[in-house]
Image (tube, rainbow, N blue to C red):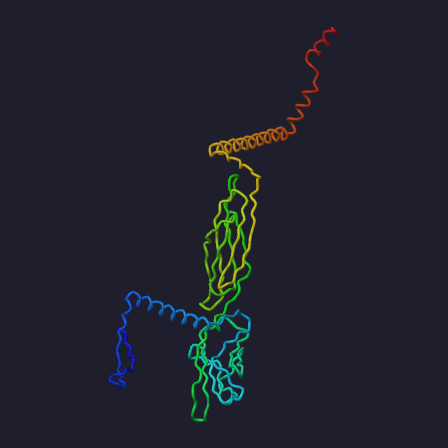
Length: 329
């Protein structure tokens, strides 16, 4: 219900007369009010999201990163008129200045600009990731100070992965197909990556595994594929994380040379062949032993027996002697 007062002046009886009249406006429909409320809520969410996005600073490992503060000291003043705190996780003091002097323990790799109060970290590490807060107090007197700025900013540090490396291992090979294991690996990156790829320009899903010592440590990633190769193939492996992407390709050619393996003999054939060979060896051994004994028996007769054999051979035949005796008679 809306209303407004409108003041009018009329002449009544020669005298001016003023009065107020209330006019009632029709109420907005319920659906329209809900729609307006929804648009208002969306606008607030978008504004909050944009504000949060501005407070996230990204940097790569080894680079120099600056975290902006929410206040800049005017040219008419100096750092001596302020107290500045840079802290991480609301408990860990990174840098602190009071009246132009550092009052915190100096930390390596950090420094602060004395005008715009930007915190510089160099070289930045993955462990530097996290929420930071800048607090600025204006020192009016030694006992009185006013907070002029307090704002949070988040640092997100990334690390590039190495060039993906593709390796293959043949597990079985035949004339029809080749069974192989394909692995794609990369290491030293942050945050946790996504591994993807193609096989002959068709997307494939890698069986991926990640290794990291902690939530703020570099990752090592390995993807595995099991393939039955029947033709030439082209494999592509890509490593992606937070806008970073690197790819490697490998071409594998299926060879046409085919060697048909010989069929091994059956167990019965092997057994029979073994028995024949053993029998042949035994027969040779027995024959050799018999010949050796026979030769030895002939060579080792007594001397008398040998002489008797010689004399017996030298005697003339009996028929010749009888013929001689007949002629003399």
